[in-house]
Length: 437
Image (cartoon, rainbow, N blue to C red; front, top):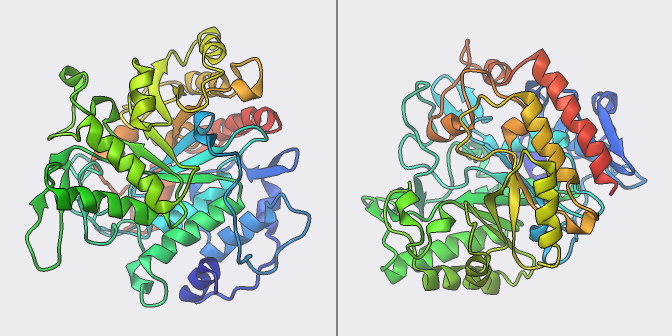
């Protein structure tokens, strides 16, 4: 049984699929590529997993409806160097998890439910969903806290399974955590998306965990710790992820440390080369994309490190500036800096018009689609958050906005209402023109 059908069975759903009428009411289409828009996230997040899978199959580019989810799903094929031209869209899967009282759980199910509203890849380049959390966070994993009580997603544990914010641990006797990630990846790939996840490399932000033992702080000079880091990331790549977003990558090897805001030592340049080489070699995948946060300036340094792309170099508000760099970098097939609509440190306040302008520049500022620069977006750039929170706050804290201790109330209150729906519609209109290029 494939992992998608296994997930349905574990949730006491049958595996027979039917076309989804609700999805047909909200379809946006560019050529044969389809997704839904003009929606509010809670309308998706309150659906069942079966309804979400039926929605994805209803949106299929194929010319037949699959009555059961297919067994063999291939990642969208854009060649080995797809990451140099991709749009990366980070989804905070912890923020959209199910909030029951003070519990936070099942973020992987929420991520599946959101997929129908993520535009699929274009003719000429890929869209890639990056999940914010995979590993347990150091403090308070599996729980939400008060709105300004720290519960950082940037502090992780390695060696002790996956986050209780994300995995559905109520059904692991029927479907393992690894199979749950595999199901997410298969559904995303079926929808025409690449997938990846965020990781951290600051030593004091990583704990090595073993059952029945005290956690110890990660040490890059400890060969066992280095090996654990590689093994954990290879394991995820083998589940279908093809991209890793590396926090603080600019500072690897002690570069530009006066602007370093992480906590603890970073790997040396040679260690990081070894890590990325080993992940590629052990997984046997030639299509991997490693994205470095703020890895800008010395492009050769980052390319030789093994990165595919980096953020925050090109002025995103200026169409002509983006197009200028697209022209300059159009022959770069291994590494390219990209355009940031927003990043994980975004503290809000940017107008809808400004976000839409940045998305427009990301999608259209080039002479030929094959020259497009990579771009980086956050969940908020597609689905605006409520006004008193922001992307960075939800990375640092894990509040529930539920008024009645139910997930539905949290999802309703996490995002904006009517203006968010209108904004989501305008984002879709931009993608309509882009996806058929």
